[in-house]
Image (cartoon, rainbow, N blue to C red; front, side, top):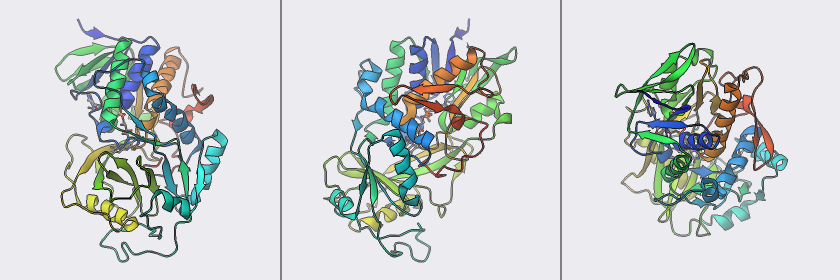
Length: 435
Ligand SMILES: Cc1cc2nc3c(=O)[nH]c(=O)nc-3n(C[C@H](O)[C@H](O)[C@H](O)COP(=O)(O)OP(=O)(O)OC[C@H]3O[C@@H](n4cnc5c(N)ncnc54)[C@H](O)[C@@H]3O)c2cc1C
């Protein structure tokens, strides 16, 4: 006899595991399936896991502000112990440089004012106090080394930054997914690890389960696609892409791991930095190191891939370019000859805003297109998916009368049309990993 559940979740990354936990708390018997042998070993494990509260849209900011609180209260949220320990939220704060590119962060500040998010305006003196070695010369627009003027200042200095104290990063992103798996299991969820979904089963005009590579079938009236960079293949398997105006594609990324020069950060905990003038974000990493990621400037070619398993996992010239861009700020930055860091995939939509939605196939749902910026939102995304599934399975038409999510910490409603698979491209987006 086939195993049965109330809901199957494809993917046990941080968003998949959070959704299993939230569904289980709402009374669903869930089975999560992941082809990896460990939870969180998909793109979650490659994540920089930065928790920040600034986005270019008000909806995105509100979601991230709600999301911050679950990490702040992580152990209480889980309400269960994990034999591997609990992921740590390093709340070191985040400084975002004001540039013409981000319109001097005026919109971000207005979003924070509306939502009551704490922040401070920093001038050059405050930036230098936090980052004594930081050269504030402007380099915009970002270039590649082969272009004239690479690493040459373009005139003037950064005028300041916004500093957000309620920000930081999660020390071990894969562990956070494991924590969520243990929390979900404590509520009765099951996890089938090392199993690959190869078919979405249908019956009577709706989804009825999945078939595994082993040939085994698992039956359930609800199936949720949280397959990260494989989301497109799963949606194609379910044949639900026909009515989607927003789609997902896997995009290759490199994160550069560098030793931090002595005195780089003024405080021991360091600082998350977003600097669109040099198209780089960075955060402290254990052992006096920094991780440097790209803010996807137009000059860098994008490496899309149709196969989320078969792509180049070696570092390329991009690794060095990110190091050189960071060295514009800190000329003493040592760039080691041995490349260390991460090569992984984002699951990107046209406007870099995720899809949290139902589909054209009754019972089939998707939480995908996380576009390199939804780790922080995993718990609230899990709540959104649970409320949405409840709402649709009760017979409501979410496309016609969208589900409204009350965000419990910030006591505000989330407009779920923002995450619709049928939305128009959101022109307010940064069209980058910044969301
Ligand atoms: C380099 C990098 C840096 C990032 N930095 C940040 C950051 O600083 N802050 C932030 O908020 N976000 C960041 N992100 C984004 C964030 O990590 C992701 O949004 C999040 O981890 C996605 O979680 P997920 O559960 O949706 O997907 P994943 O963790 O990718 O999990 C999907 C799972 O589905 C499984 N799967 C796929 N296909 C199948 C199948 N057919 N059968 C069974 N299992 C299947 C995979 O094995 C995988 O484990 C970053 C991402 C990357 C790659």
